[in-house]
Every structure is written in C-alpha cells, then in structure tokens.
Length: 68
Image 1 (cartoon, one colour):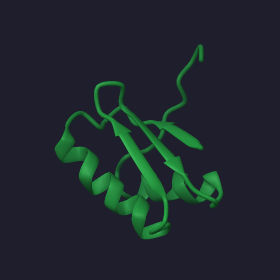
Image 2 (cartoon, rainbow, N blue to C red):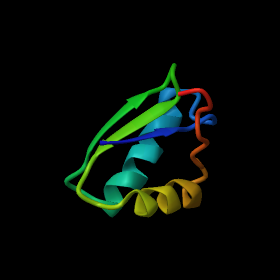
Image 3 (tube, rainbow, N blue to C red):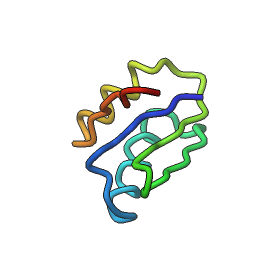
C-alpha cells in the first residue's frame, strides 16, 4: 500500500478530483482519502513514482511527513 501526505487537500471537494486523477492511472486501484489527516492511501500494483507524477500534475504534490 502506498501512502502520501497531501497538504493542500483541505476538503472533500479537493479529494474527489485527486481520486479521479489517481484512478486515471490505475482504474483498479483502491483509494482511501483521509481529508482531516491530509493523507491518501492507494492499494495498487503500480510503482510509487507513477502516482507521485500524477499527484504533481493534478496540483496535489506529495510532501513527506517528518518524524514518521
């Protein structure tokens, strides 16, 4: 499972386009968004780099969480 911290995902209106962008890369992915924690979790067989690029292109770049 992949997990990404998305600081600018601040509401459910942000989460839906983010999910759609991720599903465009892997329609079979299982995606869970946690808006209060600003996390997205993806169950997929694809590489992390694929999703990092998609998140950045969609305007939701991942930022590592320090201390975790």
